[in-house]
Length: 343
Image (cartoon, rainbow, N blue to C red; front, side):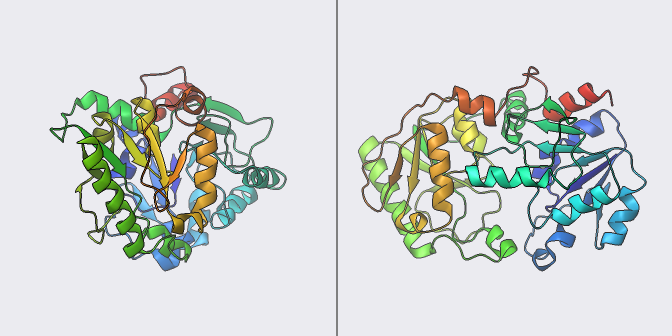
């Protein structure tokens, strides 16, 4: 079995890919890491790379070709976009069957959804689609078999609940989900300008959080983005690698449009989506609006007013489309897939 990925492998990726389940079931596999092939200018920006013993960094298409042409079982974790199009073209050229994953589904703009349909016309479709809802980001056809799995976040929830970890903060608190917006590594990878400037962004957030703490009597804590550095300028207490724990035991969740929203929905937490003047003027604004519509939620501009409200929303439809709609409620996604494929 070959697993295709396009990001640096680390402890987080180990579980996101279901490698723990493959090792538990003693299945032979290789991880072909295409990060440096697809994003050659970005190979030095990730400091937490952790090479797995079965991982191979691919540096040329010739090398990738030699691996793919011999392999019968291919797990493809690549979403289709301009950077990965060459990989899908190679799979088409080789006429290879592959199992495609969409275990990080998000609400998409209608125009973007239509673009994915166009790829079905000339690219080799996935023989199997491991999906959560109806939001596919890979070529498909009428012959594609769909297997319902969970989102990565639901898998994380299942693993977390087995550990029964204790509460980290010993008081009533609200949690903000940080996305490292001023410094996110995706900007470097995609050669984009950050959506916000650090000075304005952290000033806006700290003003809101100070106000909330006075108004509610509850502490505000920050769940830092997994790739966050020490450059952040929060006044409040910060934690890294503890997002699900902080959300589970919180009294409410404040966020922009982070995928960690899924944890808040799983644990039925009051939510508040916020934005700023800078974000409204950026490319991120449209995604915030799409997420807002999917939740039927309010979106507060904290540069206009600090009068925000945390509310519970009816998230049943969102849950089935973007978190889990599988009959296997207590199995992680890789376990479901191996069972369904008889591997």
